[in-house]
Structure formats: structure tokens, C-alpha cells
Image (cartoon, rainbow over all chains, first blue to last red; front, top):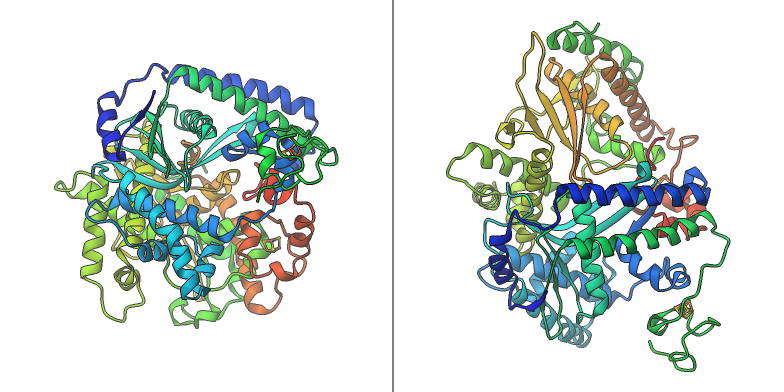
Amino acid sequence: MSAPLATLGEVLSQLEPSIGSSDYGEDEIADLLQSIDKELHAVVAAAGIDPSLFPVRVPKGRITAVLACPAKVLAELGSEIEPIHSLRGAVADVAAVGAAMSPRKPFELIDVLEAVAAIDPENPGIDMWRNANREEKNLYRERLEPLSASVQTACAGVPQDWVVRPQFTSQVPFVDGKVLATARYDMLLSKPGMPRSAVVVEVKAGAAHSDHRADAFLYALIESLRSGYSPLAIVTISTGDIPVLVEAVNGGVLEAASRRLVAAAKVLVSMVAHPNEAPAQQPGPHCMVCPLRGSCPSVSPLVAGGSRD
Amino acid sequence: MTDRSPREIGQYAREWAAERLAPVAMQTAPGRYGDADDSERVRLANFGLTTMLDCEARVTGLGGFDGWDIFKATRWLGVRSFHRYVSDDGVTTVQRAVRSTMANTIDDAKPDSDFVDAWMKDQTPAVRALLAARAGGWVASLLETVRDHDYEAEAIRPPPVDGPPMRFYLPDRAMLIEARVDALYGRRNPKGQSSETVLVMVNAVGVVDEILAFEGMATTLATGIAPGFVAAVMPKLGAVKKMAVDIALIERGLVLAERLADLELRSKDGRGAAGVQRSASFFGCKDCSLSPDCGAFAEAQARPALFGGLQQPDQPAPAS
Ligand code: SF4
Ligand code: SF4
């Protein structure tokens, strides 16, 4: 199901009747956990990794990236995000939580920035904002104000008996802790005392695209494996045409996501086991934003010859 | 030894702790902890312990309390909101408990206070909204995780919030051990088998046994009565790990306290981090005052494929 709804509050009211029910129960989730663990046991045993390098982390954000192109993932390690992008991300996250918590009136951008400084004081965008002159501030404001406003509109209406957990980190250990799948949800919403009421909310500072859907299912998988219950839905808030995108969770999407998790873990385990081997280059549309696009022999022909910053 | 009552274990632990930690305690200023200068005091508590378990050297570079922030305020508000949630029948949701606790704190804030009340009062509504979300999330995670592990949510109770901190003072020295109790479960029985369980929220995966040993020991010393159990609630993993508080666990906790005391003393007596074990990690080094001159950090940075990247060792690897 992908249904456009106007606000997060509306989504929650539509989902309430399904709390507690799921076509994928605790036993199925336990089986899925076991089967992933079994596959990863074999992967780790075959890799012959130096034990001091455990745990190999499989962050949700790296699964899609490593399946697209391992060489790009390696090239991007340690690269810094532009301050404005990092600030946009933080503004979107804080605006979302603020709106979900404070139903009365939207926060001004300046309040949101103040809250970003409190929660993420090292965000390079905060210094950029503080040191900006009036003209620069106006430019930044133009980029941040509509974002803050649209995210707040999308996240409005959360009923007060739902608990909002901001920046919730979830971890699932496999192979006795040697492989650790992790995810950080922008918000985890739930009704205390009601199992299977979890709704994972991911906030994007740009428009939604197809990768977000695959990401949503990875969130669903990791949350299911962590808590033992499949979440009710994964909601993506973005600034595109569909600001509130809802993905229902069922057995099919969890199993598909588990295959992606295992495939990505295989690549990451092998990269950690063989740090001196050049990782595979897999061209595709992602070459467009790859730091190696100017020199990579495998670069996609769509990108070769041109460059896009 | 195993037949001792919780009270007897508590008495034994207090006497043994005073004796075992005497060599390190003697290196602090004589007299009462409260009378010592801030720079001479040694406080052995959860933050120092988890820092030590991540990188021993980093403990020697820790500064003192540097004021309130949203992270410190989250736990303060979380514990108090939890208290209200379970003790006030009129408060039926976690969020309402958080909001009312916050509103009361701000209303009662004393001018010029350097406590959390004044800090909270100074914050903008957006920061307060974030704080409320974080504190509510803290309570919800605690309740949800224990409930999923067959604890009855109704039987979970918060620690006393207005009582004295859970501390054990080393006799006549400026050193104390502080317990972190996030919630309690079960019945205390000082004379016989006690089902009382001290619950501690734990984020650091891989060092849970050490945290439990320290907190089990610290609670026993602070109250003089051993709880039956100490349990780590790990919302990130959706897991709970429980250990019995016995003499062996207390001994293990004391070994950790002794090591921590030595590291804390190093920051005061000029020995610093020389010769102390270092263990680089992405988040640890980021916040470490020793990083500009630290060889382990420089080495870790030189292998970016593992550091801050594929491995991101923000927590120690599980002890195998
Ligand atoms: S240019 Fe394309 S193929 Fe080459 S490393 Fe980058 S993403 Fe991979
Ligand atoms: S910089 Fe890193 S390795 Fe060095 S002492 Fe600090 S935390 Fe330890």
C-alpha cells in the first residue's frame, strides 16, 4: 500500500484499528531472525576475519549503498557532508519532532535552529548559520523555512497518548555479536502498553524517491527483529508531492528486506576481511554523485564525460 | 557464603569495600567527601565506568560537571516523569506525565539556580518539545522492554526521587561510589530470598556484565542491603539481562571500582594517561580531550576503512 495522506496524525488514526494484528507474528519473526543468523554464521566463518575487527557493522543506511556500488561506499568514508545539507537534515528532524510533540502552533525557523543547536551542537551547519552575514542568512532562510514549515505540517496531529521517541537507535546482533545490524529512526511512535503499535517515521529533507521505499522495508525488518513484533507501518515524511508516504508491513516485505540485509552483510564482511582488496565497482545512476566519477574506469556511460555537483 | 541474607551481604560488602579500596582512597584528601574541595573529590559512578570500558585513558582527561544540557536533562526528567506516571492515578499517559512534571519544574524554578529547573526554564518551546519527547521516549523504552521480557509493568517502580542519592562514602576520605538505579522491581527482603531487581538502562552493548557488576555492587554498598538481582534494560536491542547480586558479583564490581579510582586519581595527581590502555573509537575520540596528542587516535584515523567507516567501533567489541 502506498497511500497519500495529509498528516502523520491522520495516518495514526487510520492505523489504530490494526494495532495488535499482523499477518507476520512473533514466531515468524523469530524464524526469520534465526535464518538470517544462520546465513551470516556461514558468511563470517568463510571470511576468516581478524577477531579484533568485530563487530562488523551493517548500518541500515549502508545496505542500499553497498548493494549499489561497494567502491563508492569506500570512497565516501570520512567524506564530509556540506554544512547546508547537514543543517537541512537536522532542521527537518527537529521540526518533525517538534510538530509531533506540540500540537498548538508551528515553530518559527529560529526556534527550530535553537533546538538543533541544543541537540546537535557539533552540526557544521550551526556554525555556518551563526557566522553568516545578513545576506547569507536570508539565502539560508529561503532554503530552510519552507522545509521546516512543510515538515511541521506533515507531522501535525499526533494524538497525545502516542509516545514519540526521537532518534531511536535499534541494533540487532547476529553471529554472537560479530555482525551488528543497526538503524536509527528519526521517530519511533507507539502507544505504551500496546505491543505492535510501533510506527517508524523517517524524515527526508528532500523529495521521496524509489530508494526510500527499499529503505522503509529495511527499517521494518530491523524494528521487527529488535522488538520481536512487526511495526504497523513505516512512514516517510518528505518535501515532495507526497509529503506523508505510508508503507504497510507484511511478511513479503520483511523477507525481501532480509535478503538485502544478508547480501549487504556479505559485501561488508568481505570488505572488512580484505581491506587491501579493491572493492567491486558497480556502475549505475549512483555514479552521478560518486566522488570517483572522474577517474573510475567503470563509471556509467550516462555520467562519463559530464559531471554534476 | 551463598547462605548469607541480603543484609549480611550488604554488611560484608561495606566492610570489604572499605578495606579493599583503602589503598586508592588513601590517595584522596582526608576528611569528609562533602568538606573536600571539588578538585580533590573522586566520585566513582556510571559515566566514568562506561568511559573506562570504552577507553581507559579517556577517563584521565574527563573534566568535572560542565552544566546542564538536553542529554543530562533527559534522564532527570525521565525518572521524575516515570515517578509521576506510576504514582499519580490522574496521569494516564507517559506524555502527560512528562508534560506535567516539566511544567511543575519550570513553575517552581528558583531564580539564579544552577540546577536543572533554571536550565529548563531558559529553554525555548522547541527545545522543551524535544526534551519532552526524549524523556517520554526514555520512560516508554524502559516500560516496553521490561514488559516484553515478562516483567509486569505495574510492578515496576521508580527509584525514590527526592531521597538522598544512592551513595557509599569511603570512610574519612574524599571518595564515593554512586549507584545508578533507573527503576526497581519485585520485593525487597533484607532477611531472606529477595526478588528485588534493580533495573538500569544500558546503551553500551558488549560491556553489560561489567556495568551490572558495578551497579549491583554500588547499590549494595549504598543501601547496605543487597538487591536480589540487577538487570540491564537495553532498548536498542530490545533485550534485558539479569544477574544475581552475590559476593562474586560484588567482588567483580569492586575490581572495576578500584581501576576506575586509579584512573580518576591520575587526572588529579599529575600522572595523567601515561602507560594507560587506549582504545580508539569513533564517538569516544570525538569527545576526548586527549585526542590532539593521542597516538592510538592518530593510528585509527590512518585506517579510515575501519575507523568511522565500515566498523565504526563506537562501542567495544563484545567480550568473547
Ligand atoms: S563511478 Fe560508479 S562504478 Fe565507479 S565507483 Fe563510483 S559509483 Fe562505482
Ligand atoms: S583520543 Fe581516543 S584512543 Fe586516545 S585517549 Fe581519547 S578516546 Fe582513547
